[in-house]
Amino acid sequence: MKTLRFCCVLLLLSALVSAIPAQKPIVPIIDLRLGGLLGGSQDGKWVEAGLAAESIMDGGIDLFVFGFNGKEKTPIYSAKRAPIEDVCSDFYRIEMDIKDRLGLGLGVNATWNAMPRVPKRLKTPTAAYKTAITNLLRKEGVKRPVVKTTQIFLIDLDNDGTDEALITATNITSEFGVGWKAGEYSFVMLRKVTKDGVKDYMVDGNIFKTGQDNGGAPNRYEISSIADLNGDGKMEVVIYSEYYEGAGAGAFEMRGGKLELIKGIQAGCGV
Ligand SMILES: [Ca+2]
Ligand SMILES: [Ca+2]
Image 1 (cartoon, helix red, strand yellow):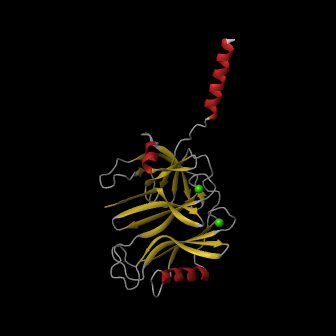
Image 2 (cartoon, rainbow, N blue to C red):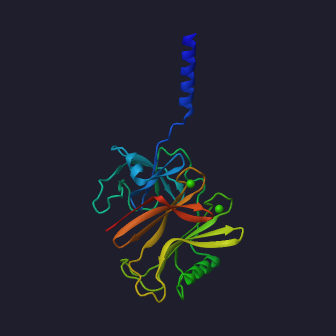
């Protein structure tokens, strides 16, 4: 009788243990343009870069590559953590055999489809986009805006059945990125259809207002990738930026109809 009871307890214990779901491994998220670890995701949650870095073993990690056309055929093999640099102690540079390019590296342990939808790319802005950019620049203090776009994507980020527009607008004439003039700018804009009409938001960027004395050193912004980084069916946007002595990238997610920076999923290094 005692043996039977003991067996029952054992069975109950093992049932309890197996009912606790095992935590999935961390999937590292890497911005290819920055060549650095943004962070990771685990069971749909965000993991900051320091923790995600610990999941990359000395032998390196293989990465799926995502460009704007979807998942690419050739993965990156054995991407390794570079030694920590003194000037950027919380930046995890990733050594990979790739040339300068935009895009995303996601650990091959990712179990979801990171590109459930593929963005459509437009070469030139529509009249409505030009007006939207002009209005945004005027609101931000530029008296006579000159509209220049570098990237236009149509993509349903939040999976509500309607495409959002993502537009990068950059008008900075200095080549080396040190000086710029009043009225110049670089930013990424989200254009979203809501029940109250179309709304435009500046996601990230900088604008040298008319009448402002000194614009500092300008950042140039670029959308680096658009992908579902945590497997919830909503797509995040990774924005890369650089200035004359540094660079950074951050992931933004749709929250309440806007794109907001995910604080734990960003990286950068400047002198
Ligand atoms: Ca949408
Ligand atoms: Ca997502």
